[in-house]
Image 1 (cartoon, one colour):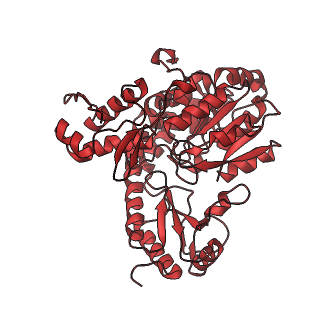
Image 2: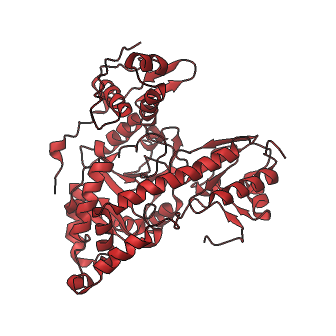
Image 3: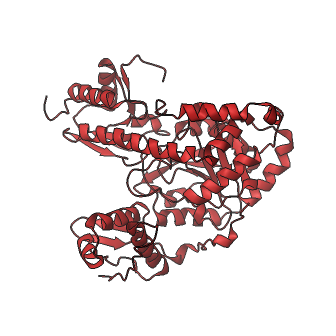
Length: 469
């Protein structure tokens, strides 16, 4: 068992658990901790460092989430293999350029989409809008840069570098009215013969858009670490679309080894690229946010996509992407033919919102609100029988697997008969689903705690899963 000579700086602003996490991560990356080597138990390390066991567990949980270590029941924690066989070069800081649902009628809708709108800082937003709309900003009513206004692109670059570890500068950021707009740009700047690979299950809206543009899309099977690269290599795909920090809809986190495998796959093809859709990375309730895949890309192979739809409002329709050099050059060749699709008024408002610190305050507030709803739902489900929950701890939905003898269709129809709308996991698959236990998505962003409790109670009775009926 590896002895860890961790030095904890009690005067540092970095929390103790993060200092421990960083130390172990670097030891694994440098080979100081070998593949398969056992780490001290959380209790033993807590006693050695004179910290609470919960502090050690927070560090270990983050390392497990990112794929640096694995937890084997009744055995302990062991270092995972992430070594240099993939040939991924370390990225140095100096390389960064500093510059109502439709359909059935329902009383309670467990939609995985949408946001909690009641706690938006409307007062601050009104103040910002009044500041934006005035004679001093008359220039906003004319056409702007096809990439989006530089002010917002600059604050996004700063935010991404700080919060997601993305190698970003304002020049390489393109704004679009939703991910659909950005995917259409990607369609124009990538090789027309390129084949897209998508995780299966997938974000179906993106699948429909990409295939609707005439591109061939091949589904690639998932495992507990995300898209299976050995399966990807057997396809003719050149572009892989992934959601590595919180796979949609399963909630899987792509571990560091799988990320390196995927980057290695992309590096071995001249026109191969990875689209990293980082759609809701702000909302993680256990440990700190998972670093971006793009931050480990040293070959210019990752197209990073983000959005304000989950963190501000889906009605805002502001998404952004960071293009690698080669594709950025292609974009600039065609950019003169296009105007940016995002309102310049909205762009300026979001820029001020972020610069003023109100955006960060809003995120912190929403994390607490979503975490409370998340906890309420888990609490209501904990005494259910015939069920298992997965995909929790991030985002605004979880997956409920139900083995009560009913089919997925029967579960959805019984819920609908009781005035509850749930979302079958099968509807997110490209082709025939490959799982056997029926499952549904339960979203909670748009529901209050009382609605969650009521809805879960009704479902438990309808499906015969409540411990106490």
